[in-house]
Amino acid sequence: MVVNLSGRFYLEKGIEERLGKEFLDRINKEGYIDVTNKSGNVLYTVTKESLMERLNTDMHATSLSISKECSFFTVHGSADEIIPVEDAYEFAKHIPTHKLCVVEGADHCYTRHRKELSDAVVGFITSKKDFVQQFCFTEAPL
Image (cartoon, rainbow, N blue to C red; front, side):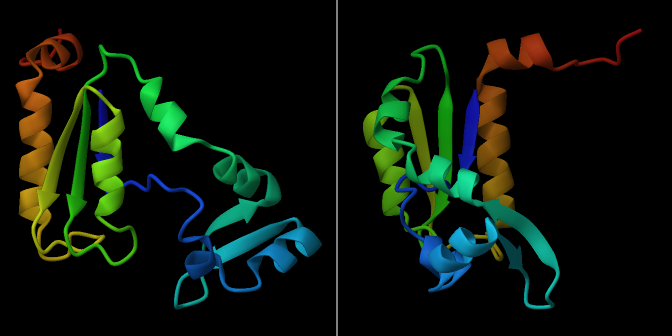
């Protein structure tokens, strides 16, 4: 089972917006880039290797390779300002077992739509009775 929250299909997009215009020069010179928040705290580090892995990942081929036994659920906000909702439709187009839930008006962080997000995810998981029976306890184990 896969639950995809606002995932990016086109991995080559959004990099400059996230890492800055000079990201390629910086990563070639230093070997990495620290991504910081507005306060200057490091959120994560992007290495040249991890950047190349992202750029070389073919999401179309990856999507087609997902097992028909795997339930795949995407939740995406219609007003996502970071990853366009069109990316969610690409997952739906290429993954046969895909189910899509677009939360109308939700931004990337579901700022005003947390209940809709949690209801959608919990609803999807609980609808998969085999998964719940295999991995979840209805009573505390002894």
